[in-house]
Length: 414
Image (cartoon, rainbow, N blue to C red; front, side):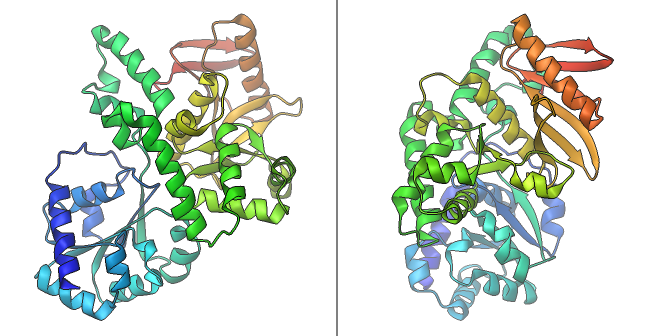
């Protein structure tokens, strides 16, 4: 066991010696580390959770355990591990537990460490950590930091440009970068090496299906699970229902479809957006729109005969809203009016509608503009909201119609 932990210390030190882009988070690192609560960093695989944890703890004396290690899991003995941590990291102030959900019964062990007064930073690639496991054993004992692939702002920073301080001479480069990000996404590994994007994300997608879903849930019919994942990534931004998917994919039951859909959300691969309705019963019945965590997966996996730039932009806006803290269960929805006009995103706080966000890649055609503007105005009237925005690829102006003012903004400004 000591050899395993010493090897992991070498791995930790090597990781900390590399140059990194400092990621932007909603929380202040200093106050997070000062809290006795567990610091839980969640998000999809390979988005930089471990890196974020290492950067948080870089100047601290901390112990490190990586549970993406077969040797550690095979030799697991919690009492022995704690003794060896004292030997390898004398006087440590924090413990970093990386991908801890791979350890059976991890939640009970973490709860025990918390009662012992250990200051813990945990990473995990599974949303279920926050639902059943975290909620039952660790309620009120943790703070969550959610990590996603690079935002557009971080992508610009990586390329040595400030998104909000662009000079006129950088306009062409800015448009090139925005288009690149729209089509290829923001996974850190491929941001650094764009030539790897197809093969890397193709492999990562398959790894999430097999390792984080099929293996974790003992799924026997992996072919059906994979077919569902491929269907969802090819139909991103479209409304789907479990009944239709069951028929379309010839699955054995609607319950199986619902179960597989939930499994595919757990590792942050897909999100499902509900249709807004004041009546919860009707909201639950309506089809949900499906979004994928990064546009790069669309480029690498989706079956497509066109560029889908409009849907790629909508998906990008959705993930940006999730990054800002909007919750698909409580504060972000889509909406259809009585006349079947649609607004892409309804942002809510409590019972109040804060903002309506429509996404349209190109509004240069008068017909397109009329459709988008009429749609958002009709929805605004029904939802009693006058904070309206249409996000485009590069258009910027203000539209006034029927007593409403609509801000048209490019994605870089949004």
